[in-house]
Image 1 (cartoon, rainbow, N blue to C red):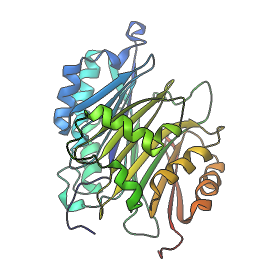
Image 2: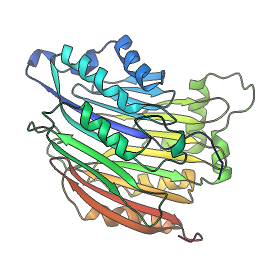
Image 3: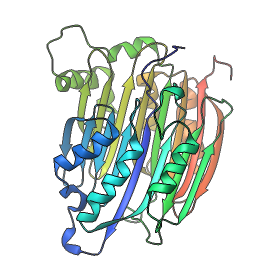
Length: 343
């Protein structure tokens, strides 16, 4: 393990807003001008490198991960030593000028590979929770912080939720939805090499990213998705996918010694996630993987559906945990490692 390197594990923040002015919709937060978004990202310490939008939301590939802007919802996911939680105050400010009020907050992350390199408030989960408690408005009074453990001390799932009396919109035509966050380490070195650019290839980040998407088979995870991809120099890759109002995103840090990849998507519990999970595992062949599934209702199928999809590919489920959050659904956290590995 490298003494120091780039921190692949992301911090993820999801904020929901509500407003009383029907004239604000359907655009809502999408009315934020680019300069305002840049100010938010400046506080986080990252920038936009590529963007795409459809009739439902806007997706931005960042210098460190991704940003999704819906009419009443924003998701920011950042890696490295970014200060993600410092986006909350400016986002609340800009939303207020649009007649929108914060009604829900969810913060999640795995365990950092290089925790001592993180700046405040990401120096510990305790510091993060204290910062969140002090920053979010008091109307978000139903709050819970939880560290979901695994058998390995290096793989825990950190969750903080806060919600107001106003129910946040988590239904999609009354479907039961989930958000799946996959974190993978110890990537297969041969497969990880596909995320390195050739020296002086003369390509833009966009065109090199498109090539990586096709060469690795990432475009086959969801053939229906519109993909916005970007390849970093000399290595690294990010992608956002848009399929109607559902997003997906992948981020890869391929360096040997601290290789990392993440995949996140939204879906319906009624859909079979087996194809997506199998494809993701085949693209990266991780030695260790964690899967966190957040659902707006409890379903026992999530336990088995995930394990059934990935265990035939040489990964064994080493631990699983479940926790429930007030008015914020349930979270299932499972860890897997290659069968050849000891825990």
